[in-house]
Length: 568
Ligand code: OXT
Ligand code: ADP
Ligand code: MG
Image (cartoon, rainbow, N blue to C red):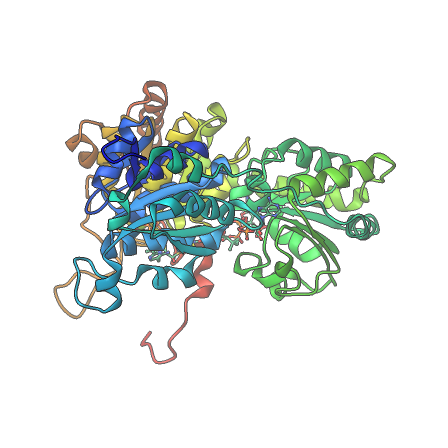
């Protein structure tokens, strides 16, 4: 090119935005600051949706669940060191839960960081992120931005999905290059999550084992919900006639009210089944590792459908591993079933139905009580009907008692409508997940939150109001963690598990222009939630729960270590 001729230029900022757009990523969950403030502004100006949070952890949880809901990586954008670390919990959470997510973080000058000379927000972020995610990359040159994003996208969604870290040093954003060369350097990722077809032998083996069962059970996990193979899964379950048990976030894949649903007979089916087919569920702590008391005495055979070959035999022997993506595997099952299948023995399905009906009948009267202050069942009875009337609504749920009791009481009717604490049982996912769910789906969100759980992300009610989202937060306010009744008998400090008595969380929502309601009875709660669902206005309901109503750690109190020295 002749000297003085003007060439069209692009730079790191624009290449990042173009790489995202080219790959159909239209939303960024972020907290602005050095060095990414302008990136957010420019992305917004370029038509991307840039959602600014009050804390990176919540932006990260939003990105993770966006990935789960859409099968595209959710993108969280943070500033260096402290912002990066705030986002890192969510990245690790995404990896643990198999949600595709990319944490994009600005970072400081490589030369100074590597010599540890004390740069602004100095930290070797790549090294720190690496053990906590599926893959971690750093881009140093503008011409590599396209490849950097392509690798991050592929790593996040292919195989077992998970979190990916992408490190973008401050200097990268300002680097200029020829615009045409820049466009050519971008990569549109083709077939980012290729189908993984199971081997015919593994399909046959699995169905042979299932067919020979006298007391078969299918366990559906959140991997099955993620796969978005809803029709195939429904057909398989119904054609096979095998009872199914949904894990927490798989509730609604088939309705909880489905005649084959064994959710309300959980202990019975775990104990008494002889063959268990896991579809997108791991035999981790949530399934007592596939052994021990909850699995009873009768010998079990496990069939496991998973995209990750190394998951097989992780806890117990898997007699029929089927490695592949759930959509491909289940459609292969359905094809095989078409040439003949006998339903499981009626003795087994009847035994489950009668246990289920018994448990449901036992619970029913508790859900009708009109106590004030409310107990968990009285309040949840109301919310159960709200979801029944609004099956399209998304339920976000965290807490201990608030989580465990809501999981049992509130029936789900559609796939991917229940979003909760996931594999780690983490508190703090609430507002981030609620915000992403509303934005990604356009459906109303009902967030059912323990008062402690809510506190981990509570400041995001401002974000909810700012973006005017159809989110109704119901706080089960029992004055503390598990219960609000603990007393410190030694000094004037409050007991370690209790909060300010009679706190009015509804006032927080009012502070930002949303609707706040204090509900002391099931009737008041019903009115307020119905109003919120109808108006789609940001609403926070402080549901006053009897401080004595809960139990230690909800349904998992057995996991608390005990001191033999503790005075009684
Ligand atoms: O078959 P049986 O007879 O056994 O009966 C079962 C079902 O068949 C039956 N059932 C039904 N009956 C009738 N009708 C229907 N529809 C029905 N459906 C089911 O009910 C029983 C029970 O069924 P379930 O629930 O399916 O089975 P079970 O046995 O419970 O299942 C076992 C599990 C392990 C699969 C299940 O319990 C589960 O998924 N648990 C998840 C637990 C979890 O993740 N908990 C969260 C963590 S607790 C703790 O760690 C907390 N912290 C610490 C902390 C955390 N987590 N994170 C961070 C960042 N920092 C600190 C804190 C701070 S909780 C917490 C706050 C708590 O306070 P809050 O104020 O927020 O909350 P409150 O407690 O409300 O005060
Ligand atoms: P849950 O907590 O509901 O039991 P887990 O998170 O333990 O579920 O398990 C989800 C499993 O699903 C993981 O082992 C993951 O590898 C698997 N998985 C995720 N997506 C797919 C898919 N598309 N096809 C097959 N397996 C998948
Ligand atoms: Mg509480």
